[in-house]
Image (cartoon, rainbow, N blue to C red; front, side, top):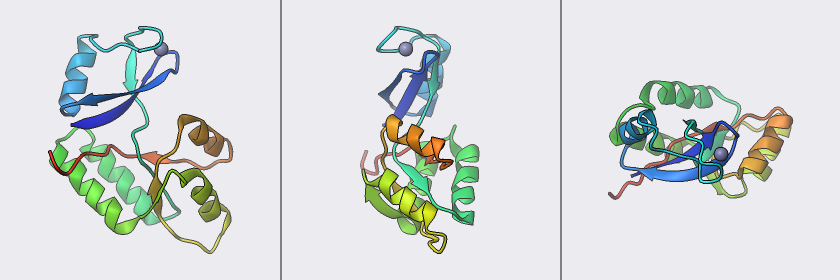
Length: 141
Ligand SMILES: [Zn+2]
């Protein structure tokens, strides 16, 4: 199972679970997905929890991994997850606070990951801090 944050044409965000990324594409193509707020069926994949941040080559690595692997199977997404767990520090829902610490402290080269609400993400974007969102797959099923 994989959780996607979805966004409709009116910028409503909501979460939904899919068996894999192909299922999302299939359902979306058939217009079987709709916004839980306005019933629009123009749905895009949006942010996926959690998000990672840091100033580094590492983030670019993750970005390029995601570009290549996003449409692929769980196995590859698990690799990304393992990579992040190994190289990034988990900060839970303190992400927006910790991201600012890292961002404004020029000496820190820490890479962190955690979760943020859409509101927090927007605030950070206004400050020029971009978060990278990562599809998070379960290890166990
Ligand atoms: Zn909507």
